[in-house]
Length: 294
Image 1 (cartoon, rainbow, N blue to C red):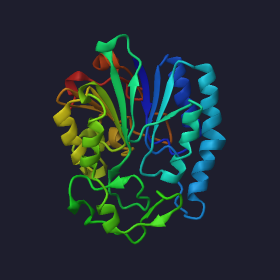
Image 2 (image 1 turned 120 degrees about the vertical axis):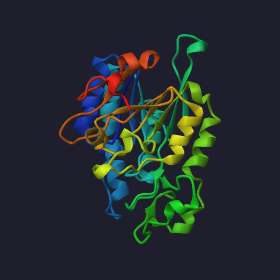
Image 3 (image 1 turned 180 degrees about the vertical axis):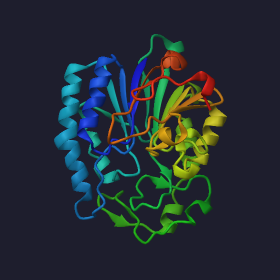
């Protein structure tokens, strides 16, 4: 199955249009966006409405046009830590119209030639806690100490439909990334599942920031090491391909990919699930060099 993947479009409708054009030109069967779908919206009095307006006024018409022109390509959308949950709820209307399918916490069976080829697609939006204010899709990684270094003076969630302050104890009481991933693994065979996780795995080329800092999820890395899915798709750290020199890495038998994001150029990957190594291609960086793979 051929798929096109990118992440971190942050409401850039021109980038969404480029993605749709790329999916059509490559005859993809699935188009996937792996987090941070909506425009930056920090100002509390207008944040949620601004993001919901983008879904209704810009994203929906574009996806309706795409569906007309490429009816055989399904669209899957994952929330990210810059998206308000109350705005992501607007994706429900796109799902009802079958224009796009929300990915967070969901598992979908992908079209396959026969039962032996069955693949699933699963999504998980949450990232380890950041210094930023929106906490809808942030949580502990794998332990209580994960929250210790962060200030909760300007921390908000919109789980109840509007932006509200959240305290450290309330976030600590929620399931960790490790716990959520363990639950997600029960919904399909992990070795036949493509996982779309906004956070990259820790200490890989995919979570590398300037000065060599790594900020990905330890819990996700442990999950991949344990279950060895065929492919994981990530985002969150826009600059990682430029910083590390790699947009793809291997953890055991698993291919892990973060195409990165730049406002100056469209960045995405194309691959066939039956031959990831032979088909994986980046719009900017081309094919990975097997001799230099991390």
